[in-house]
Image 1 (cartoon, rainbow, N blue to C red):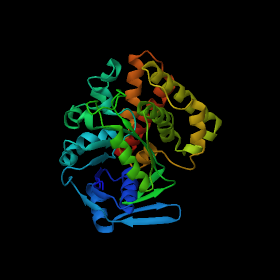
Image 2 (cartoon, helix red, strand yellow; image 1 turned 90 degrees about the vertical axis):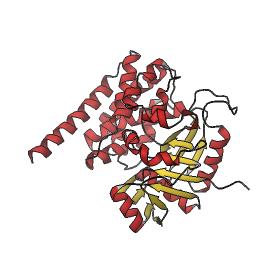
Image 3 (cartoon, rainbow, N blue to C red; image 1 turned 60 degrees about the vertical axis):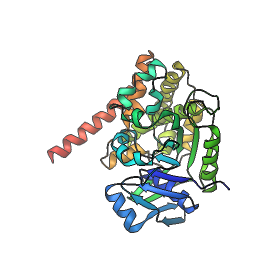
Image 4 (cartoon, rainbow, N blue to C red; image 1 turned 45 degrees about the vertical axis):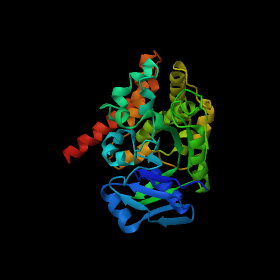
Length: 340
């Protein structure tokens, strides 16, 4: 009999919380890492996820630091929060721990020393202190893309519009699957995907994780900044002719940037637009963060993409404008708060 996987989830926001609840409900061995009000509420009230008419509350173990080495470590925080989280998660990282960052944008591990030159130039943006590369071994990292339509109602309480979907893949560009190949083996990822599926999460393993990442990146950069500017849901933006045209133009720029560095998207721009139109009345995570006064995930989603486009001489006028308007919104809001 295969020994059960011991799983640690760091970051109990909308995605991390939904993942934790599904795994706990499915009988997996789960430990959570949380801080502040989230930690306090989880200890007192447990973790509650509502999907449709179904509400589930669970009480997994939770602490400020990982209790020790784990089989799997999910990093479910914003990319700019990773460095601050390191001291809390490092106890979970043993020599065989599978590390699964669930982050938006271009992940720091795509800037490793063996990455193409254009990607290596992004390291100061995505891993400014170098601590992520130093402490999270590249050979243990799995690429991951999450598709989740969920939001935090209050810390520890999450509402999900539909089941979560996770796509896993070997982070190393080397497609060989020998024991000496860089990155986790496909067998390990398949085993993890099997557990996730058994717990109600739609998970599968792909040999094209970089294309998956770029498809999600293109979608995020085309919709997240625009949602902050308009205050609109994905469905509303993708069905209005004016905002749909902006989304389409942004997608074209992001797809062209990926193509210039040898990464394709899995779907054409028009198909991605149609998917957004079918997403329902969901607010992007960036809009949720903006309304809550939290730091926005613009570096990994926007700034890194633009920097890469510059290095590859790919024009991105629409994305540049969207990011500039978001920066203006934030400065304007900060000015109003200081004046009041």
